[in-house]
Every structure is written in C-alpha cells, then in structure tokens.
Image (tube, rainbow, N blue to C red):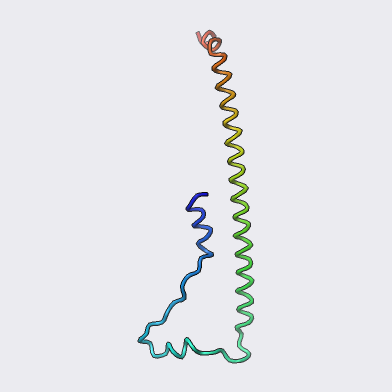
Length: 104
C-alpha cells in the first residue's frame, strides 16, 4: 500500500498530546483541577463525541475496504493485461514471416 495513502487515512485517527499550560500561569492550578459542578452539560457533549468517533471509525473501515477492493481490481487487471500481451507477442512471433510478406 502506498505510504502517503496510509498516512492520509491514519492522520485523523492518531492521538495528539494534550496542550500543556505554562508553569508561570497562576490560574493553571485552578483550571486543571477544577471539577465540573453537578448537573453540568458534559454528558451530552461526551455522548456526541462518542457518536462522532463511531462514525469516524465506520468511515475509516469503509475506506480501508474500498482501498482493498481497488487493490484487488488493479491486480486482476494487471494479470489480464499480461496474459493479453503475452498472447499477442506469441502470435506475432509465430506469424512474423507472414507479417513481413504482407508489409512488402
């Protein structure tokens, strides 16, 4: 498989490190350790993110299956093309004398 196609497909699924706050920021301790209050709207947001993640995985698997099907089609077409070229060259080689007489 082509490296660039694989990189393109996996670019969206790789984990990126979480951004860190500078040590000199006085509010970093309160921001990082703050616990959301009861009844916050985090649960629906998490559910939405999970749904997006599932759809991304589904799309990734579909793209992988399509690439595999394309690869099989290309291999099959290449095999057929090799057989046709081989037959054409065999016929041309066995009938070379007749081709020369026709051209003259």
